[in-house]
Amino acid sequence: MNPTNTPTTSFASSTIVPTLVPSKRNETGRNHTDRAAAEQAVVFGSHHHLVGIFHPTSNPVDAETAVIFVTPGMLHNAGPFRLHVDMARRLGRRGVASFRFDLSGIGESLPVGASGRSIDRASDEIREAIDWLEEQHGIQKVILFGLCSGADDSIHAAQKDSRVSGIITMDACGYPTRRFRWNRIRHHYAPRLASSAAWKRLSRRVIGKTLAMNWLLRLLPDSSGPEYSTMPMGSDLREYPSREAAEVEFQQLVNRGCRLHMIYTGGALEIYNYAEQFFEMLPGVQWNDLATVDFYPEMDHVAILCEDRNIVVDRVTERVVDFAQQN
Image 1 (cartoon, rainbow, N blue to C red):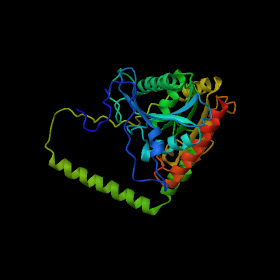
Image 2: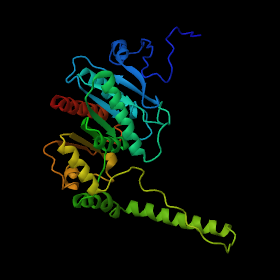
Image 3: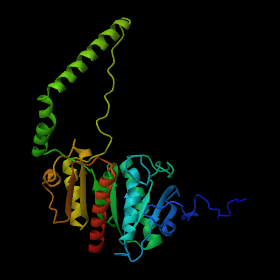
Image 4: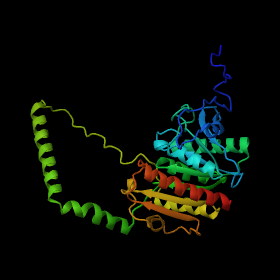
């Protein structure tokens, strides 16, 4: 029995069109029912386990081009603070369709798939998303947007699928350069070395830890058993390729005409701290004017502030429309 009088649908069906209820709230002083009705929830993938939202558009810039938003980390397809939603709706108004979906085991997508490296599994699932766009909407080329690990997944997926015509990333890979190291010394370490308050904090921390350790050692019983060292915490969960491998990968993308726009924020200062670093850290690549970079040192990693999010949405939309017009 179906008490809501809505069509029943199997989870394993390839496309689900949800029943949408007009919202009483509106974000810009007008009703958004028309916009919401155009958005389509779908289930797809080789095991019908991936869930996504397709955002169509009217008057497309290029009817054969769409954007795919790749989930960052464990965040679902809406993106951090609904960043992907804001981008998708802005792009729709500018004539570019888009698709945002959950990788397996994230959000509403089931944890189904082969074992192995997560970046390879993500690449396969991005390919399945492109397949769905091609089969259902005739999309021949896609532009990938990825933040953090989503950036790594996007770059990796583009190596395996020539239908990726453009990539836009936030806080992708970073490799140290001479200028990077000098900036770290000048802006990070030098102010701390010259700060008496910093030295006082360090002294209190060291003394406090020493006293606490001595107190704990007195409480522990003597033991003649073997001593074991604790396994150190991993330094990074993201899967960067080596610098040499990155140069090869980016050169392959550029050689086939894939366009790139890299955004770096203050949230990546541990690996990236000046605007030109992207080109200087990969000196072996011949970019052929296909790569551009933005650096926003005052912006945090996920653009949590509304004004920062607006900057990112505006800039990404601008670059996507430009990429689509060049396809």
